[in-house]
Image (cartoon, rainbow, N blue to C red):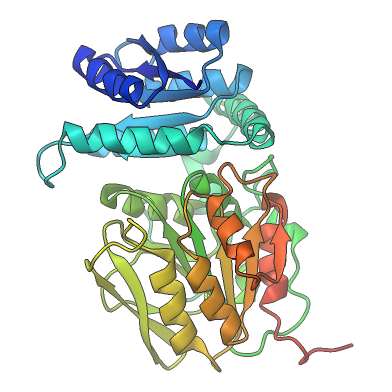
Length: 403
């Protein structure tokens, strides 16, 4: 039987979430603070933790970091509907939490009943997280903690000059591919040194890369965005299953670590070479046309596909219709639950695009890659650290640069 620890300073949330999980057959314990959570995990080794973000004393972010550094455990963050809560939740994902849910605030029709149903579904998902992936998360958390201590001690200069050498998140990045940055330190599952990846051959046309992910995806997406060399000149679309309020902040974070100009997608955007757009939470992103060398994208709030919006399939399938003959097309299926992306991978393969799936060993949840592989249309299965290099290689048009 799966043991779940519910951590929240609100007795009401502890009770309703705990009761829903117990009714679903889980063994449930509760904690009212980050300090209690860390001690409980150390003592009782639960299978999954649900963690409130903002609590008095030790908050959820610090608790996640401590747990992942000593007793790696799948953690689901429950975030308040506030700017501060959203930003803090992304910090928690950076430190090793695997997924997020937003607490209802009455503005979008969601209530506590929706929250508890979603928690049960996500706990089902997280209980299958792989041990090897959590070990990587532990190592990454330890590296992140050491780096933050170094910065706090005044031995680093990022706070003064901005992340990655001279550009702060508040300074718009040039959209002409002129941004420069210092390679980041390689860590397990985190950003790698982009100098390790060389674009050694010319790429015919402008490559297009569609990346789809769900549970566990943000950390791996950050690695890809921070590592892909601008010389590749790709147009990149990221579809991450994530609530609406999180995708803009995810894009802003990616923009600080990537040579590419990163933004949250807006309806009618033109996606040019050297740019990344993140699909807006709560909206499907469709590739609808081409203007010069730029892709035209549109947003809609149509019916959910596979229970999600944005759906990876919607973006991949429309890209396959539009991009054919306009440069290489690469589809990437990353970690997550369900089968979203499988039909999109088939569509990309059908028009001669290159398809990549993240391997099981480095996928916190292997559902999306597994379903993509089951189509028989995946060209290669790749561990997370090798994904940026394989994406670069996939963007060379086969047969045009033979030695």
